[in-house]
Image 1 (cartoon, helix red, strand yellow):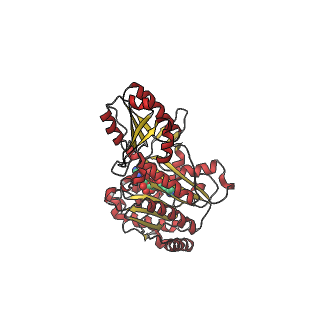
Image 2 (tube, rainbow, N blue to C red):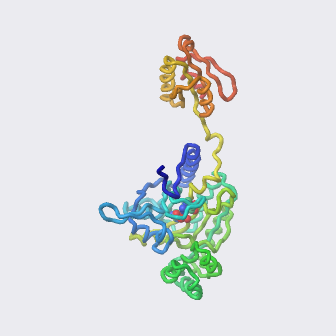
Image 3 (cartoon, rainbow, N blue to C red):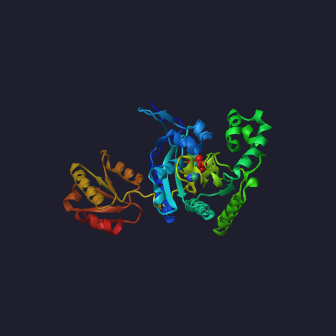
Length: 417
Ligand code: HAM
């Protein structure tokens, strides 16, 4: 028995119906906010993530699926979408397009994480990236986009947590404070964080190790070390959110696990019991330095990604989306099957959904099957019906039956399906 790789999932139509519903909602909301879809390769040069996401992050240090390609370069499966979009903007010279650039994506991502409910090695994300606006209104509108989608998916018990982590001007002094704080307890830190102390002390605030988490609890907070511009930016983001009636909590513990963020960071947390321990359904923020970091001309940017795979247990598929087929034709005998195949094809050509017996079932078994696949109507086709050119269409949702001319099945379909 060959099994799927650990941490990866199979999805069958009952589940993909829900995924398609979420994706359709996401596309719809993105379009209403003026975002167009971007598609980039699932593989990128490893260096893109090392520089973009950051060499000192867990994602790059521990979780990437990396291999040497047949002709040389080291490639990695994308662990997220932001770095790829940034690369695509630079490589395709999008600087001349109308600003802000607004792109969204629906992608699979790959992270070699320890599997648990809600945390997988292959998972899908809906993400948006906005480039070319440094205003706090841009941050607020990105958050509003995520909030709109979450509300329209009717996900319950969701909280928005917002924080700011400063910019390249205020960060050096803050890093110094963090180094001083953590140096005093260096021996207790995990090995990865010991090395992060010099390279990127803010990463320690996001370490998953219990002891590092405990030490990090009382560490200096970025919000207490902001430059006036960052403080003003944060105040305005908060004020816009209030204006739009989007409730949030200022949560100074949020630093995000990826290196490119500056100023605003946010997460939507879902407290629904069905979620398991992985309760963050959406994460994002501002990343004004990313383009420059990977060799492009700088543009301010903000965005987020929602984990679709993680959302699945909390989303109910509305009844109107659970649609069976319009008509099942149950043939009795070879001549009837020959006719049924033609009728079914005629209906399908006209845009209706129809099916017939492809496995040689008894009439009773066919009716059971028609029920199972949610047929709205059934039609039993025997020699008598073919001779008369007429048959009875039974309404399976309990509203009687109609006799129709087989030649005019399409006419009936137009009126009733
Ligand atoms: P992230 O926080 O790493 O951010 O991931 C965003 C969301 O993807 C998470 O909130 C979670 O719902 C989902 N997710 C992450 N890892 C897993 C996993 N192993 N299994 C299942 N779901 C997962 C980013 O990826 C950024 N690129 C977001 C962003 C876009 N920031 C700016 N633009």
